[in-house]
Image 1 (spheres, one colour):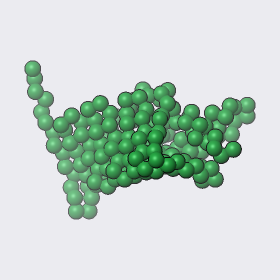
Image 2 (cartoon, rainbow, N blue to C red):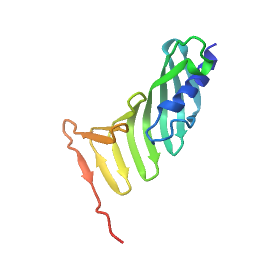
Image 3 (cartoon, rainbow, N blue to C red):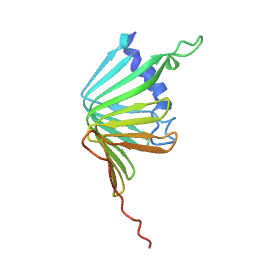
Image 4 (tube, helix red, strand yellow):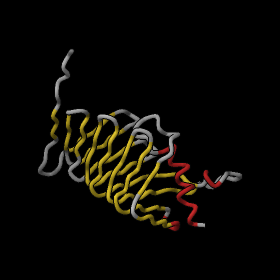
Length: 165
């Protein structure tokens, strides 16, 4: 039954969207104006004012596609039959976690290696500090970020010195 797919994917996605570190056992709650399940393509599409929350991270976008793969294990429950591979958020993307904010036109979350690629005039703030470029890759597993320049656009960073009290 194809309607069960969101529940199967939700159970596995609890382990996979982890840019906030430590939220792997917290469920992801996604709300939108419309939901489409394409079982043959292994994708769930959320359209219109999409909000995804997991623990202390929130993702906002116009459109979000959750791609999953089926896992065939003998004797497994329905919840163990799908695993999120990637999540693609498009249109006015905003990601918020504590004092960390990222905006872009597109964000692709790769669950297996805990990496996010931001494109479309991406900007990332941590407190007042800001980085921008043509593409920003955030690798949460390795705790590193890569900001790449565009054809006619260089990488830009604004860093405020910490004030001692």
